[in-house]
Length: 309
Ligand code: DHB
Ligand code: FE
Image 1 (cartoon, protein in one colour):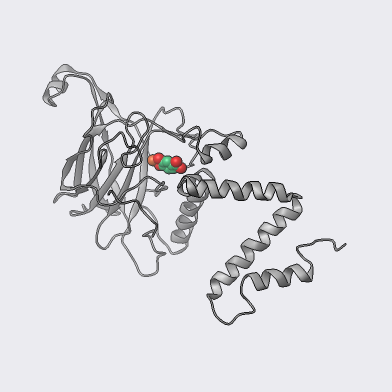
Image 2: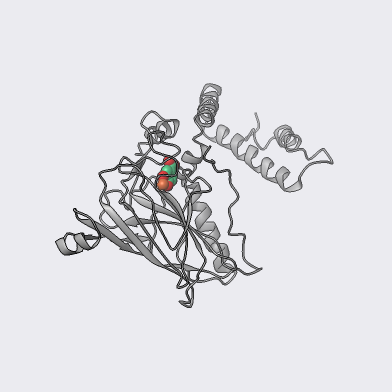
């Protein structure tokens, strides 16, 4: 028997044919990637002596993952979405780009075309016991110059950790808005402080995490896309100081510079001034955008998004 089955000429030839190298047509780059992926898979099978039954168990898992529409949920759990951020950061650094608000993963729960308004918005439509949140800030360039007309696209979970559209108990676009910054580059919104998110216990994603001895919890967070003509699109989130899962995010999205401390206001005069009858929280957070330049890697990530029906 040869030392390594994967290295045997017969298998090398097989994988080259699998990748279409013996054919004129097709995409050259794709051929290279498929050759690598199939070779690495065969190597994994050989090195760990993966049995056919184990292999088909994995195929069954991937099928169920797709049927449950959870590919986009497992990718962050495997750290791949965070790796894509680290890779983009490094490519930007090598191209000489510095500064700007750190990026972090988009996650699988964005939907397009949330209601658009100028300067301010209220995100919470559905009744929820959450602490009222007023969040505001300014979008600037890396020199501190305000960016008017930027679009702050914000989405977050309710206090049960659910996202509208994916959670049928919520009304369409609950906790999702697009806000155009005013002439000073400012945005502000009223909402409720979200709770952390957890993978459904019976989901294929949680099934794999559990098999690895891992939890499927995320700290509470608020997602943002920030876009303006001439600037690089920013995909990011903020987390909150003191959250149990702040540094134990199953999706590995927490980053320095994105951790905020919601300020709790319980003073009766302040409560009254806001037209409320209970304490509330405020967050101030400014976004710094990098200018677009021809030598930089593409910042807009093309990926399928759900559309509200
Ligand atoms: C997942 C959920 C999120 O809310 C998020 O922001 C990122 C990932 C997930 O289920 O994988
Ligand atoms: Fe999320």
